[in-house]
Length: 274
Image (cartoon, rainbow, N blue to C red; front, side):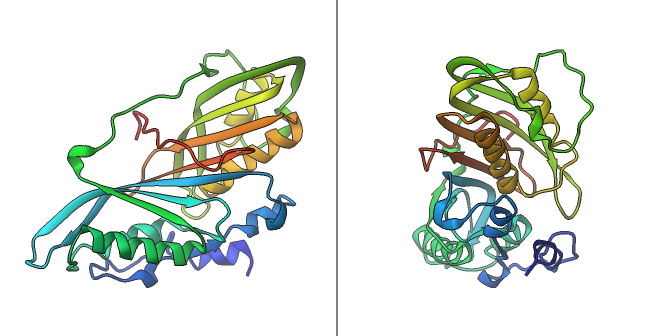
């Protein structure tokens, strides 16, 4: 099935009935290799590893006496899984716990692990914690490139903006100016983007222009980060590369994809906009 058909048939942009009884069938998977094939990437030779970290702020269920329990949750879906889970379907699935009774928090976690692993077609890690245990805000380390006085004329992705110099460096850069759009609804998706690499120095002005060039681009969070990784990897040819985006939440969920040439996991760094 073509990606356009997959997106059209997803819950995004459609009127959907609110379901408050547990229903794992609400989860809507989208194959990752649709985007990989568009980038000339084969599953057998993925040039990156990584993880998509989802944070849920609206997880609730009933105990056996009908009393609500409220928790926050962290989900890690690894980048080599077969599918991404469409975000609205994820939200609807979590909503379906709201009026369902479970024996314990461990029982809820077991259902989450089983359902999400099946939908993703790969390993998923789940952590549930009490609202009083919510992680504190942090921030990216490194150098923020946003204060450059640059003229911007390109608002769709242009990898030719990425150029390198002659000096070898190892540095961490970040920007708060990443914005893309939902591929169905057109709603804005805001993010802070962190890039760490070792190799020929990437021109910071060109990098900032490249990040901003996503401003009118419609794509899923995971695909945006994979495309950014691949464009830098192919254009700048670093020895090592990490790309990490922390997106602002929508519908009680935030999605934070991480892609790396040499690491498959990273800390769940909650930023002030999240």
